[in-house]
Image 1 (cartoon, rainbow, N blue to C red):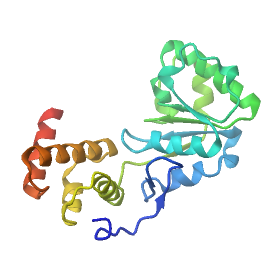
Image 2 (tube, rainbow, N blue to C red; image 1 turned 90 degrees about the vertical axis):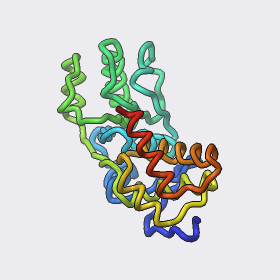
Image 3 (cartoon, rainbow, N blue to C red; image 1 turned 60 degrees about the vertical axis):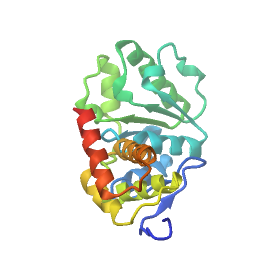
Image 4 (cartoon, rainbow, N blue to C red; image 1 turned 30 degrees about the vertical axis):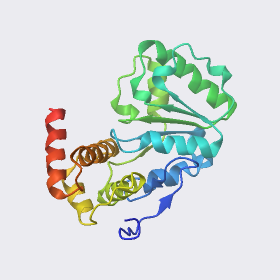
Length: 224
């Protein structure tokens, strides 16, 4: 199937992780992350909707920079001055009242140490209501790069890879058909392929449009 489904789409190997596909939806963000030396005050915020690939891209960046990734939810009790490498704060918009204080001190530590700091969030800081005014002002003054929801090319590439990974044989025409009908996020595509694989095994049948239609309907019902 990999030879049949040829997509004119550049592929970016995610440093030991799954391939990260670059398309118009994320190309600008990838370019900015490739050049941390150009970030004002060595700081950047990567914003985009759920499922757009922010966390994946952040892990790619951290691996390339010799850094680490910390979820905002894990900042409780974290010691900011212990950080001596570039850092990602994932889901920075999910901080609590307690972790905002830690994020504020971490932000200052990274700046004083000259270490690159990348934060991911679903929305830019200007649209977030941080409780700590000093933290809000610093983040709102930061450069922001957006990653958009996956476009058709990116979703198609994701489907091809997931089908290939699972050694599932599907007709090439099924891929654009699924892209047109599925929820437009990486998470939804992963769930869809897993559900198709499970259904095909359970019913001992090939993955066809008829089976895919049934699976999509079931996923829609479960989401309600």
